[in-house]
Image 1 (cartoon, helix red, strand yellow):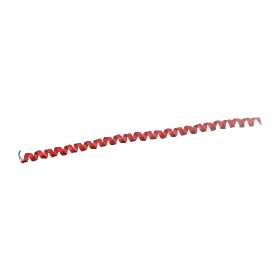
Image 2 (cartoon, rainbow, N blue to C red; image 1 turned 120 degrees about the horizontal axis):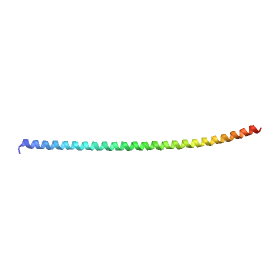
Image 3 (cartoon, rainbow, N blue to C red; image 1 turned 90 degrees about the vertical axis):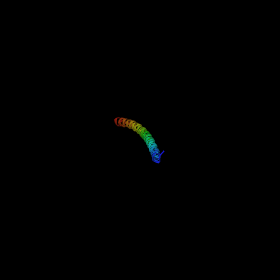
Image 4 (cartoon, rainbow, N blue to C red; image 1 turned 180 degrees about the vertical axis):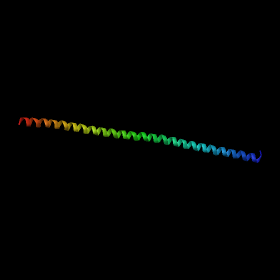
Length: 90
């Protein structure tokens, strides 16, 4: 085999090896980007779940306040009735 043929063969092998390494590097980058996208998606779901949990907590507290206001309203109505009876009876 001539030296120029050997040089061409070695050069071709080196080029093929570099190409494969670049391809493998791209695959690594693509895999990393896919993992990053998956993690970002999961993080968004977790954040949404936390917001939903907070919303439920606020809703529960508002219902508690509503129940207390309703209770006070009933007591005020009772007082109004008693005042009206006292005024009418006086």
